[in-house]
Length: 139
Image (tube, rainbow, N blue to C red):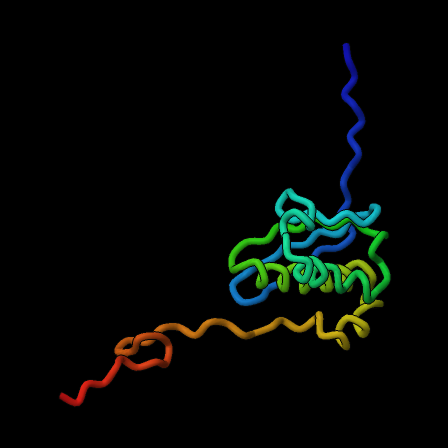
């Protein structure tokens, strides 16, 4: 009878949830050589704009761990830029989770540990948008 192939167990070293606007990113940190996968695609394929790719990689660059970990990201909601910001926030949290707060001061000083609270204001009744009024007609 054939033996089952020994499965290599995948161990998540750290995980973090990042948020920005309405985007939510779940980030898993694993041992590896620096590959970043976002929703099943390489980071360069998912975020076609180079500025968004650099945004995602900022926590790794500042902590000098760009080639130390493989990162798996599942991101939903929002637009591309909001998703990139959520990924950055999640990676920063995952690095702190893995290294017992060793990188926390570096990442906090760079502003990566703080969730960006700015969101779109809801539309109010009697208004065209959140604050804009309908045009007034005197006659």
